Structure formats: structure tokens, C-alpha cells
Image (cartoon, rainbow, N blue to C red; front, side):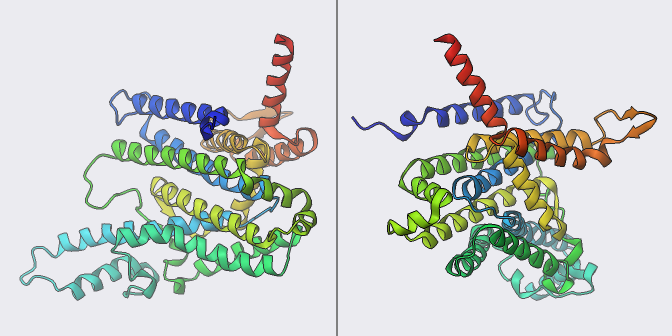
Length: 391
């Protein structure tokens, strides 16, 4: 008798159920729902954390299962944010411009409105013209498609060149990091057409929506939870079948998989491109909750943090990537948000805002040396001991 995917993998159902319960609890306790136990700012923090968990799942697919340590996936994450940010900023500015010109003696022409929008958006960088890449910024459907297409196309081209040349190991990691650095440096330029160092701002304001931020934050939180659920389900389905067996084989012994007749490059390119698209979707949901995106978000250090989160959670285990990212992200917000009390050690005052990254680095080293399977591995060992004790 053929059993469904969920029936064969009950852990996926457990994850989805826990995510649903978490989403329901946050909704009920939020200010937008009326109870007010959880503030709007913290709902946004939780929503952003879910987006980071989604990109961590993508990172676990490419690194934990395929064995490719990419240090560039936050570039795809940022590109997704830029694509949706263009529409948000354009439409918000258009509403402002049309409102300001509504009382003019003569109704403004479309050309005058576009010129005014260009001046409002790009005046900060000394320009008044909308660049060519903003040609479709007025279309939500096209910009949503670009959220997936732009990161996917970049990953497809980069991956085809790298995998065709059979670049592997640390050299591939360096190449992905170089790609990320090059993209960040390009976006820092005013000529990039994305406002240079200023980035895109005001993204938390949905054009034409008068609902309070307490409700808008819940909408994005729900969307982030749904995206994580679908991304996790897709990833679990992929790694449970033949595709997952092949990419794990590539991770463990690439030469042997090639000898068996599989096109290693095609499998690598497929997983690299797919995870880039997932990262782009995560970024498109993250930055409207953050309210701003600039090139610093795409700096190589962000992709390194992503690898650290997955390693701490336990790579090669999708739920481990989620656990590690949620744990480190929320802990980071607590330490760097001034909520953690400072310590005084031997007369020296330890301010966690300054020392948090040191603590994170030490944690990564400790996990690598003493718990290579991460938090998820520890939970599995604990569950195994309890099972042995019960039996």
C-alpha cells in the first residue's frame, strides 16, 4: 500500500504542526489581534526570524546535503529584498506625488508624475531620472517574478561557469564570497540605480494600505510562516527521494557518483539555483519587515553568519538549520538590543553589544570541535538515550 510523503516522514508533520501552533500563539498575543502581550516590534522580529530560518533551510540544502559551502547566499537574499523594495518605494512615492499634485491648476501628465517620482527617489544621489532597471517598478506582478528570476538567473550563470570548470571545495567557497563582495561593491555605487549606500527605505509602508503597523506586521508574519512551511516541505520532499540521494552522494564521494553515470554538474547547478530562488523569496519577505535595505546587508560577512547559524543548529538536518537560526537570531536581538545586563569581570565592564560577535565566534568554534552535529545532533542523542532507557 502506497503511503503519502507525510505518512512516511512524520517529523515533517511535527515541524509543520509546531510552526502552526507558534503562528497561532503569536497572532493571539499580538497587538494587532488585540491582546497586546507581544509588541508590534517583536512580531516583526519574529517574522524576520522566520525569513532567516527559510534562507537557512536553503543553506542547509546546498551545504548540509550537497556539500557545497556557499558564502554567497545572502547575496541572493538581498537581491530578493531589492526587487520587492523597488515596487514598494516606487508605489509609495507615487501616492505621495499624486497627492501633492492633486490641487494643481492643471492635472499632471504621466511624464510629469514620473519625473517627480524620479526626483523624489533619486534626488538623494543627485539625480532625477528613473534608471532603466526601474522600468517595471510600477508592476507588482513583474517585481514579484523578479524576486525569483533575478537571484535564480545570477545563480544559474555563476553556477554554470563554476561547476562546468569543476571548481570545488574551498576554491568554490572563495568564488561565491568574491561574487558577493563584487555585488555589494557595485550596489554601493550611486550609478547602480539602487540609490547606492542609501539603499531603499520606507519599505514597511504598504502603498495604499491604511491599516496600522500592528496589523501589517501580522500579515508579513503570516506570510513568513507560510513561506517557511512551504520551503521546508519542498526541501524535505527533495532530500527524501532520488534527488536527495544523489546530492548526498556528491557530498560524500563526488568521483564515485560521476563514475556511476550521473551528471554531477547538472545536479549541483539545480540545487544551487533552487536554493538561490528560495533565498530570494526569504529576502523579499524580510526587508519589508525591516523597513530598509542597503548594500551592507549583502556584505560577505552576512553569508558567513548564515553558515555559522546552520553549523550551530546542525547541518544535514533541515530542522537543525531552523533551530540554530532561530536560537542565534533571537539571542542576537536580545544581546545587541540592550536587553542583556552587562557584566563586570575583574573590574572590566563587559558590554554585550560589543562582545556578542566574540561570543558567537567562540560558540561556532566550540560546536565545530565538540559538537559537530550541532544542537540537532544533541537533541537526537538525548532522544535516543531516553528511548533506550524506556525500552
